[in-house]
Amino acid sequence: MKMMIKLLSTLLSAAICLSVVSLAGCDNKSGPEPRDVDFELSAERKAEMDKESNTIRVLFPGLDRSADEWRNKAVARFEQDTGKKVEYIPAGFSMADNTEKIYASIAAQNPYDGVWTANSDYPLYYVKQYTQPIGDYVDMEMLQENVWVNMTIMDEFCKFNGEYYMVVPYNFVNPFLTFYNKDLIEEYDLEDPKELYENNEWTVEKMHEMAYKAQRDLDGDGVLDVYGITSLYLNLWQSMNHTGMVTTDANGKFTLNFDDPALMRSFDYLRDATFEKDIWDNLGNTLATVTFSQGKHLFMLEPYWSIWELYTTTDTPPAFEWDVVPLPYGADNTEHYNCVSCGGMCFINGCPNPYTTATLIEYICQEDMYEQKDNEANYGQYLTEERKELKEEMIKKPFYNMSNDGLLPTIGLALLNSVMRGEDNASVVEEWRAEYTTILDGVNTEVEWPDPVDHEPYTFDFEDNADSFVLGANVKDGAISQATGDEALDGSGSMKIEFNPETNAKTINLATLSEQYRLYGYTTYKISFDYKVVGDIADDTEYFLAYYSTQSKMQRDPIYFKPESSPNGEVRHAEITFEPVADDQTIFTLLIGCKKAPGTIIIDNMKIEQIRQS
Image 1: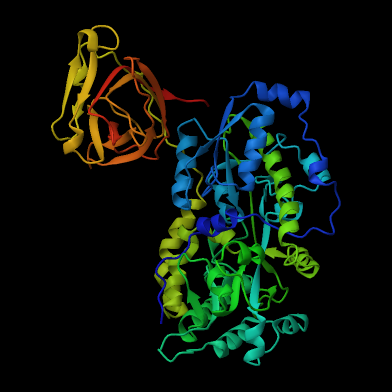
Image 2: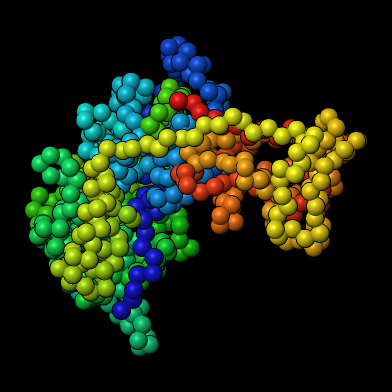
């Protein structure tokens, strides 16, 4: 049996959705063509935006700004029309890393403005106070009039205490579907999934039975060439049975759902697929669409956007006939709820520029409609009217078990990994009950924010304090000294760092600030300084600043910058912003490093100051 090497986190699952555009059908909605609507800001909105910063800071997990992607297009239009700038805060696929960034920015009293997120992040973002209600900032009336926002899904997943916390563009809603290879269905004389669905006989048991019959070792080498099921999502069997690991009690507190027979049955389904029948092909981080398009699977369990991803992310599009039906329904899902994911934009709690951020959100909702129309023109033959209608019907009864389960680390995938190894339900429940109960107890406890440490700016004129920095331990043939006379950038002294680039690695830690100048967690720092690089700067020359632990001797969160050359001895100026870290125990200090740099840099007038906005 294959074992799971790497389970996808909720954010990775969501980020795969984020990497493409949601192409929902919307025949039954009314509203003007998106390009026929001139995006206009009221005088009142403009006046409020004028009071705010010219730059807003946003997290787009997994989004490369250089990519020709629809949210990047929205940002470009927003920047051109408003004169404002959007700074992308580095954000990858790790929920733990991104929530730590958000928490640290709020605790540092310098919160980011917005974050692109998914319904798998709620209610986590709500109960942890990572985000705030959209309030009166977003023009919901305009968005609804133009049908640029999906209120059905917002009401289901984004509303807490009567307030909306996430704005969902109309098309960024994806029910999970069962894609099936019609050629294999006919070749192996299997029942038609569409007929089963229409006759109310499309069940998890039926899908597993068909998947098991379809598996083939065609060349006799002992390795299956045709598998029953492929998917990147291990949690789907819970959604099929309309259940999850976390629920709420009569008092609205979050609690484990381990005594629910429906949850235990979903574990039975998962164990059957991954252990007993071994019909689920674990692809790790490989896109399921790639192998399904090669004809290697009978079923693929993926979101709606995979309809056109089969033709955009694969080297060879499917050479066989395929179709879709909803995910099968478990025995306890008698009302036939459907697994539905969505994405949208939120305000970070304490958002310093809410009117500007709201305007960006509105541009994103409009751009979603632009992209919808463009892609319908390109892939309309696969987005049949039947499939569009199926999607609209499915989202009338949405369910997403990963919402509440997102309160557990990696949405409880550690527990599910035990199930797929064949462990019985009683063992699994007892293995994880205590740890998960403790976690939920913490969730139900009021959030406590740390008390950040404030200090006066550290300033260095290097007239007599060049020894505030010490040479990096990995520097060969190097020295830190005080530059005087004509070498000094300002006054009578500067700090000169010298090293031999021929005898050092491509990336080295040049100098570290003394321990007495501590950098504290939960603080945004701005570091400014004058500098001059002595020598020729290559295209790949970079310098960087980083937090540096004086205990572990490890660097953290380096910020790279491209130095300017000084062909005529010009003095340059740099300003670097350090994002906060969620750590008030480690003794951090400042580290200066470089990558493929010349051998000498002279620095002067350095200032390290805290930034707090609220």
